[in-house]
Image (cartoon, rainbow, N blue to C red; front, side, top):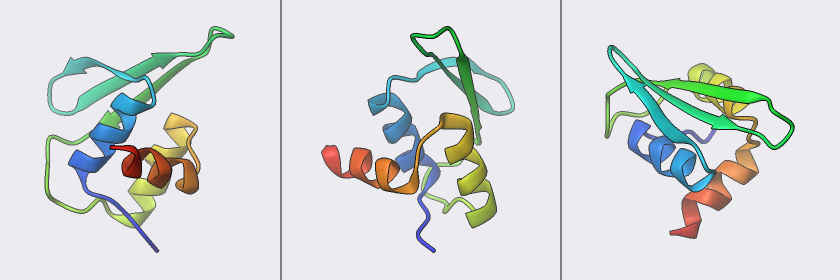
Length: 77
């Protein structure tokens, strides 16, 4: 199963319109959808480390991104 690093996930969140809301023990990224829903994704401060597969899929669900959308956004740059 493909996964990504924490830094790659940050890049994708930025490209998907998320903004860094808060940084304490973990980073909180947020995005408000046009219908008013607020999405929040919590991300570790790690950078080059791979995200464990179950956590990667949980974060994709939080961001409402499919795996295909994620890797398309990652390739954009």
